[in-house]
Image 1 (cartoon, rainbow, N blue to C red):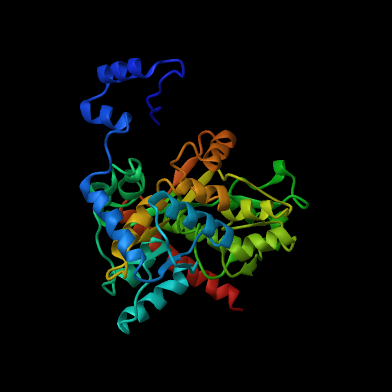
Image 2 (cartoon, rainbow, N blue to C red):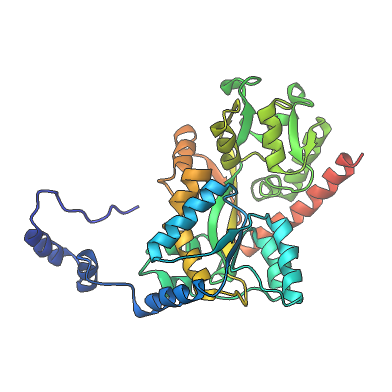
Length: 377
């Protein structure tokens, strides 16, 4: 990450101007001196957003952050940043709940939420694209001068076919979460395959309604390797729980010692509450990005665009401060720093191409068939 151009505190204003002029192009110099405002296009979005703010309630259906305190802090910061007064409501629904709801609203011509989020590629395709609710926004073209880092969320962090549709909001980083009353740090499993060992029989939890991170690991192990790992884990009599929050909750309560599908944000949230819980990175770190987007026929399109562009750039720090939501690629993130410190050469696996996505989707379907065949008995 490039360090910003700085001036010694002792340098007089006149010498700063001369020095900057020598090393910066004219446009950058004007910006550094505070002489350039957002381009007309971005400024126009802000003005239209203010008009739309007065026309009705801003409905936010992004799944995280979930806590009212975090939501309020984010919305207050957004309003202050752009001198807005909003009547807002935040419905932190998971995509499994919000997707069918949004589709039914669209079919019934009921106004949609202004912004939506918490979606993986597969859910976005299967519900939003399939039903024609997706739309395109030139995020970089409209907002790069206002939010210089937006390319990380709009371009670098999104597969090419989803650019101008999705913004990367945060990364689900799957790690080994363990109960500190039951497991010493040095004994915590470093790989999900370790949970197939007899000493963990019946002492770990696994999700019975979603395949991650086992499906993501197909990118490292191959389809057959991921299925073989699933078979071994199921043979070791895990406790079945309805998704990662329930798994981490079971670890925190002491019902199980460790779990499959625990991730950093959930573990840190439980630690903040005082639960006897900790996490370490796995030898291979599965990452599942989640995305936010502006739906077609959003009732406040400019307000929605402005919020999302701000949310994944300037607002991202607030997300991490309150609920530990971060990008792994952000080297300044406390979560990333912790992972790097403990595992400098950690191998990160995530979907990086359409072929990768097809492999993960196929593996996920097969994994869930095997889990359903055992969990339902």
